Image: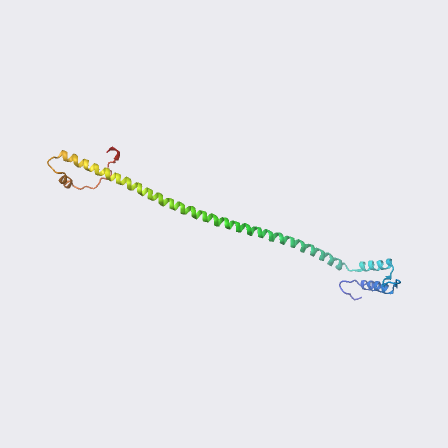
Length: 183
């Protein structure tokens, strides 16, 4: 016995042909295009054809059903993955914007700090200059007081000569501390 088409068993074709023959041989209904067939005979032939179908056909139907379920699940999963990816992209864009904003704010803060540091440096320089000016003024007063005191101690020597005649010495490594408030 030779094998028939893969979707039909050996007796399936014969049973289907028998159903066709029964329908063709059936009596026509009066005033109609319908025919009368024996319900039981047709059902019996079709059930026999179903039972004759090879197991592979049933398995193929099951595989097709599984395939559709798997494809449906894959579509749902793909939709979820795409939605999650969109959410992540939105978060990354938002983080990028947050980072850009933070960098802008940081640059502004650095610029403000540098400006404030320059302003304070100028204030410190001005303060030091004022203090040095006061110190120089106090030192001048002390020099005049010393010169006057020396003049009183040496009436025969003029002040100009006394200042010139003093040998110039280098300042000592541990000079006495000057307190301008004592003047």
